Image 1: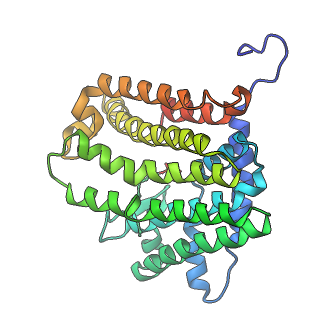
Image 2 (image 1 turned 30 degrees about the horizontal axis):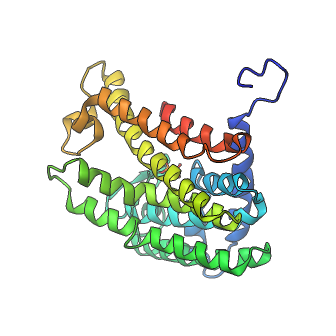
Image 3 (image 1 turned 90 degrees about the vertical axis):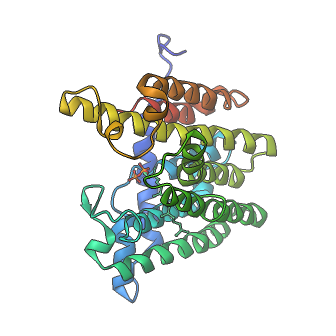
Length: 305
Ligand code: GRG
């Protein structure tokens, strides 16, 4: 009943996101206490607890709940994926990569600490993520075969099947005239693969069957691409609005983006296709249970910043 005219509760996505963020922030805080040497833990906590949107943990928990699992079973993998995400942001900001001074409005990890500490904090977050799945799944009664499969899924998403591969191709493409195939390769590996691992790990620990896992995988891959297409469109349109001009930032730089390759209207149409494809993957599940993931796809598609 989409209008709620018969008094049924409408799904409230903002409330759902806020409640999952509280669960995840609390779990992350407990997962990473201040231990000796404090400088390393402080550096890890500085970035991990710095207020990201927690989209990946929410994907893991929502996928687990959609297939009949509970939040507690998904929390270890949700936290682990956020640790990997945080590691990738710390490393991405380093002088040898993007060399950024600000992240989420605050000094980047290597500026607040040092390049060597930031490098080690990223490494320690990466290893903690796998330790956290192994220990957390056992504590929450998740069967060992599911935990093992989640470890393999996440490991693949970090290395040659995901982040590292996407970053290498991205760095190699700097200043080059790349086509749609390379742009898509970069986004599928750098962005979509970790979102995919988050949702798939949630489904695995929730006890999903193979067909359900593969639908959830495709859903998350569409959402990951959608994330980047919308990001590119916002980069152009928001800068245009700020400047009061028709051509925005990315149309004026060397970076290849979707609006550059297919125009702003073409990129918007592609985003609409991706959100429809993502939602279609959820049609095989009980409709009421799909609400969080449907709303997440729409939230990413229609966000304004
Ligand atoms: C060290 C093995 C190893 C891999 C790292 C640096 C690197 C290789 C990959 C870069 C990955 C990267 C930074 C991709 C961009 C992903 C992205 C879309 C980030 C923004 O995500 P949001 O909006 O961020 O969810 P918040 O701040 O909300 O958490």
